[in-house]
Structure formats: C-alpha cells, structure tokens
Length: 353
Image (cartoon, rainbow, N blue to C red; front, side, top):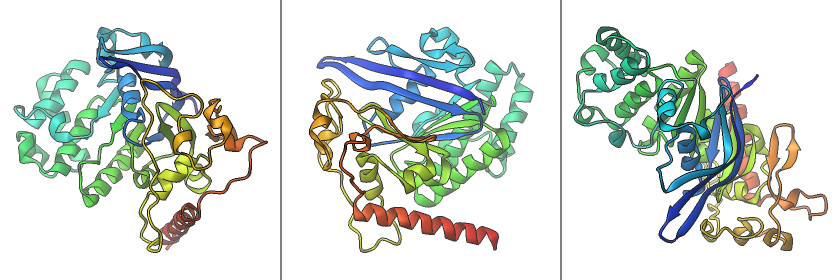
C-alpha cells in the first residue's frame, strides 16, 4: 500500500530568551492509507510539535522548520505558506486537540462550529451544511442530533464535547486525522468509548490517523504501528506486536515497565530514573544514555543509528550492534510482555466464541 504521508529528516526549533530549543531533531516516518500510527513518549519528547508541524501550526517567528520535508500528495508542506496551508487544514488534514473545552468556541452553537468548515472548504450552502452537521453528530454517537445541534458546548458532557470535536475534524472527509492525546481529559469509561468510536469511523472512512499519546495502554487498542519518541527523535518504530512483544530500546522497556496491568499485582511499577535532557543543549551521543542503566561508553560518544530488527522493526540503540553484550529486558517488563500475549489470546478466544 502506498504512503499517503512521508516525513523526512524533520527538524523543528524554537527561539527563546534562553537560546534555541531543538524540539524535533531528524524525525522520519511514513503513513499509509487507512493506517493508524501511534507516536508515544514522555512529555517534552516532541510528539505534539511533530503533529503541529504537519498542520503548519508551528508558531512564528519563534518556531522554524530549518530542515526536512513533509510530503503529502506530492507537495512539501514544510515549504508551503500560510495561505496554501489554510486550504489543506480541515479539508485534507484535520486535528483533534487534547482538551475539547478549549478547542470549542463557547459562544457558538456546536452546529455552527461544524458547519464552518463545510461552508468554507466544501462550498455548501447553509441548509446542506446543517444537514451534514446533523449526520456527523449522529455518526459520532450523539443522541437527538437535530435538537443538540442548536446547543452550546457547556451543555455537553466532556465525552460528548470530544465527540463534537471529532465531528468537526471529520466534517470535510479528511485524508489524514491527527489526534493529539484526544482522551487524556476523559475518564477511563468515556476514553474507551471514544477510542472505539475512532476505530469504527476509520473503518467506514478509511482515514489515516496519527495518534499522539503518552499512554502505551491506549496504543495497544488503536494502532497498527508505533513510533517511540525521546528527546525529539524516534528511537524505536515497528508494528504493535514488535513494540509490545519484542521491544529493543531500553527507553521502550522503561515505558512498558511503568504501565500498570491487572495481572501484575506482584510487580512494582518501574520508574525511569532521571529527567529528559535539555534540548537547548542536546547531549553528545545517545540522548537517553544518562538515564539508561545499560549504557556503554559509546553511548556517551556517538549517536546510535536505527538498527534493523526486522522488515517492520527498527531501534536506535547500540545494544543491537553485533559487538554489544547481550542484554535482556528486565524481568518485570518480560512479565508484562507475557501478560499482553495472554490478554490477546483470551480476546481472540472470546471473539471466536
């Protein structure tokens, strides 16, 4: 299947009073039609900045893309001006933001907010736009859409507001949907409903999704592939099975070890020691070296390349070099990997029955 989006050697910097922050440092990935790519990592790893770069929403003049390409339908989005990006935003690439209350205009009825994009990008008249807005509210599971279209955001619950935000993002049938931690502000039950809704909508519309999250538990249920980001770089990328059953980067081990699971009552959560590096002065070598209990001398001297684990799986760690010592994931991480496999097996058994 061909790529709908290709990101090549993307760099994003921000000029601050303290100096230049190198927020994204040479990110590469692609996205196929109908695929969900999850980008995971701690706060400050560069996940949200990457998606804002895809939308042309890097704040100027402080924010810049000094290097790299974002290829979409033959165009390099990194080189387009604001006027051209306005034609792509909403119509071809849409975004679901983290907090629905700040994403919605509190002074406008939700119907008007959905209709805006339809009138601007689809050139619909108000009557047709209203009919389509009602269809979209119904699609995202809001009951009585004909009545609720005339209500304001404060009249909706948090979960329902997020559904409205998804309806706005889907209004113009975008080819790519960027979801920036869309369930963080919601409780666990509503979170599950929103994730299920997104999976269902993707099946119907074949939209490609880039899903940003710090929660690996969410990733297992929604993604086809996973990119793990640290200090502005992708340190491991592969299919969901690659990342959950055969992780290779110590940072990925740390993320998996910090996940609570129902079956691991005897396990303590593994905290990753230390803090992420200062991206005004990125460290020499592997940025994770200072927090990596398996770090070798070379980690402080040279940055590791992305080593090929399989055709779908790559990881940037010197532990994959042929001369490196053999290191296994911590026992607690292995137990979690085994727990994922057991859960998947029981899910498949449940589906068959």
